[in-house]
Image (cartoon, rainbow over all chains, first blue to last red; front, side, top):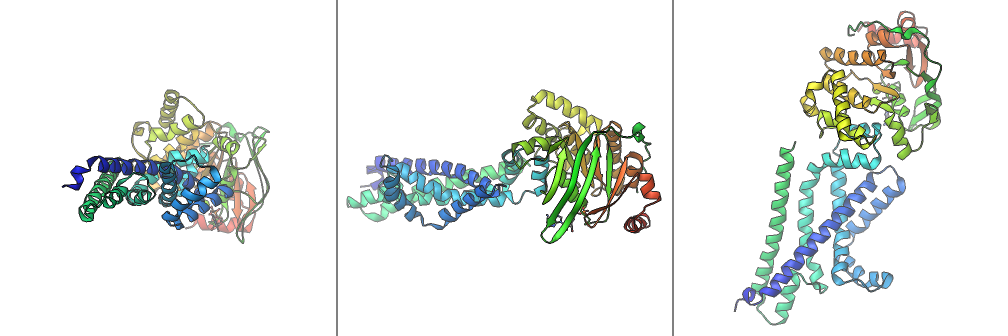
Length: 215
Length: 261
Ligand SMILES: Nc1ncnc2c1ncn2[C@@H]1O[C@H](COP(=O)(O)OP(=O)(O)O)[C@@H](O)[C@H]1O
Ligand SMILES: [Mg+2]
């Protein structure tokens, strides 16, 4: 009868799968993106080079190609122990980290140079300067683009479904393969994505308002 | 010029023989521009040196090479007998011993005044928070901004911000303090409060390198005036000698401009 009610467990598993995969990839992308942004503004040329290479590589490669690499190249090089979920996490996390890095870097460039010079003059190391002085002041300009980046990540996680990771988009394939009418399935899947992306933009709007109040 | 008229303390006596900052044969280029040309400059412990000269002559760059905010192309800089190390932990440690006060204050905008003067103590000197705050408040009192401790820099006047910046540098117990035109960004009525804090510091025996055109300060607090033009040190003399009887034409020309503007 109703595709949603009859297949609630499938939808639920798919929904949870997407939320978890998105959250984990977002976390990985955040950490990697911050590190790479640190590399890109560091005074050490090899680190700067590595950061730039990282961004160039992952920002300019189609995500589907990264998935293919994770599925067929990574096992050949590092062995076959990795679960599909982990491989999807790596592809999504690495890809998104390039965008996070650039958002952070452009935020960093809005902080006056004198702030970092004052910090270094006090004897702070490069990383202390970044962590204690520059990044906190960059936050306000970094947060809005991050919202779009994580919404894009949510939708990009659908590619994992095509690689047999349990997530929302895969539910659609599962059910339509069983012969259910495709339109209502799509509708429910789309709604579920909306729930996630609306939550993300809501959370970020809250965060932005917080940052505005906190001068 | 401002009317600071504090007389020199007993520091007319020859400064102690040990050299705190030594620049030898320092050269620096910005592209084709030779901003520092064969600079030799020795600053003794407890000495107050005023650096003066036309805009673009390399005064700021000279100041900034001393704590290696600018690197040099050739020559050597030593502080308290130690050559400036390469970028890294060791350089950070050395920078903590060299206080720097900027023309544009550069207080940490997202930190309160008190946090500005405790952050370095806690994160660099590894002092505990209570001790750092006690010392921070004492220093803020000393420069006359103790009552502003819980405000943010943007809520303070320029003169107050610059005094906080001096307290922030002092909190690290520096061996030498560098001032790069500390009063140039200030409204005239705020210049004196900053100069007075600096006078006090000079009387307390701090070693200071001060880029400034405040002749009142130079006359009353400096042991020596260094005149720079076009990347070179053209002339060095006591303030009295320099201002009443400059030897070089460049200095005469410069002084006539700043005295009769
Ligand atoms: N980061 C820089 N890059 C290129 N040129 C610079 C830089 N900083 C200063 N200069 C140039 O070097 C010269 C000396 O500058 P500066 O040391 O600031 O002089 P002063 O402080 O005596 O006015 C000026 O001509 C200035 O334009
Ligand atoms: Mg200057």
